[in-house]
Amino acid sequence: MRRHEWVDIFEVFSLLIERTVLWILILCCSLPAAASPFSVFVSVAPQRFFVERIGGERVRVSVLVRPGHSPVTYEPTPKQMTALAEADVFVRIGVPFENAWMERIVSFNPGMMIIDAREELTLRDTAGHHHEGAQRATHGNEKDPHVWLSPPMAATMAAQLAARLGAFDPAHRAEYEANYRRLAAELDRLDQRIRALFASLRQRTFMVFHPAWGYFADAYDLRQVSIEVEGKEPGPRALARLIDYARAQGIDTVFVDSRVSHKHAATVANAIGGRVVAIDPLAEDYVQNLLEVARTIAAVNQ
Image (cartoon, rainbow, N blue to C red):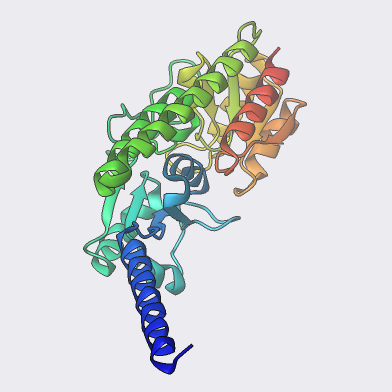
């Protein structure tokens, strides 16, 4: 083969390679880039369950209140505040520490979307009942933040969350709506299982140290009686009335959160010949935890 023929073949081959590379580049540029997950902060661990179920792989969720800490007195760490400055969304739920920190959180990141998980919900006053006829105790205008402990309210909360995430990220709105429908079905199954557990209870009153379970009680026709009222432990007279009330009602168990002092709960339990049992309002494994709590209360009150 002559030299000029080799040159012609080489030029044709080079042209084919250039065009192939060009088409590959055009194709790659035309494909949608995989979006990075956007950053969502929540106040307490149960919220992570809802945001991750609805947001799926589109979200990266961080919890402010670390394990073992109280959402009443929590103070975000400097590292958390730095991360919040780069966050896309913050989902608040009304726990007490938020009131002290929301202004600073917003000032750190004015462009961050703030979602209030309590939107569309009817809220209880912060409450603790001592005995029959006691008035609901309130902290001024404070509302009970433990909305997630009622599966029906959690479903409403999840619907609102799906809508707000869809507004933030409209390209994936249909995905969030589909995820919500699956979650709503799961919450409905949980609700039905709890109702079955409580269908034939002998005793529908249960005693707690901290009044976190009001929405749960409302959902299932139960009555929560709290040792702590208005955020304060009872004095001697109030403690004596609680003991008399528990004896009269046949209550032999005091439910506590492991994050708070058990001293007064143990005093009541000892006086009525009963026991102290821990139930967790802040567990991240939402469905399994709430089912276990329901089984525990049902076993005690049969």
